[in-house]
Figure 1 (cartoon, rainbow, N blue to C red):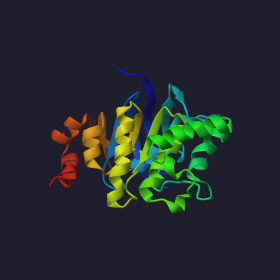
Figure 2 (figure 1 turned 120 degrees about the horizontal axis):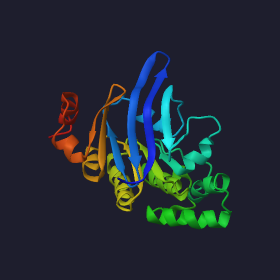
Figure 3 (figure 1 turned 45 degrees about the vertical axis):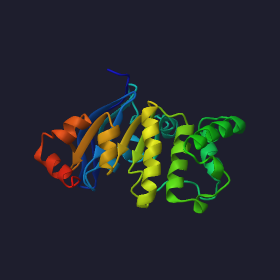
Length: 245
């Protein structure tokens, strides 16, 4: 068993009378690459947003190293520095350069001096192949490049866990591969990752665990071999059948 980083206990989320997450339980251990799959509207992104404190859970617990981050007094900014998030729509600051996008959070949240933050940002921009574009604004680069910058920005905060919310779904098909390559490299390096994705090949080939959600609940979870080759529930089989040629 690896080191337990996150533990979600009996998590529920309602929007009015609509219960979009119901009694969610799962754990994230150091080095896990967990892919969350399921049809649109199954609660996957809401779960990630609750874990990142962008949505308020209706009930339940989210434990980070055993401490409940839903209690009063927890700083969302400090927690998000350790549990970072990469969004579907990039969420870059359009009025800042690529480099400044990767520096500002380090300076404001981690209190790093600008020179240290700049060097750290450059390390990750080089890693994702975006060092030649440090002076560009987001409007001057492609969607795939924006997402690579967003990953570098998140990594520059030295997170313990990275959450990815459908990171390729806003991209043109030819740009999907460049982002998945970066994510595969991160997984190989031992980064702990929780990925909401429709990219079934990534879920099958890169994950240590796959979680299938439907109707706001976790229906099935296991290794990629267990979930893809031998799903236990009919609804999982029906969902996966759509992706088989």
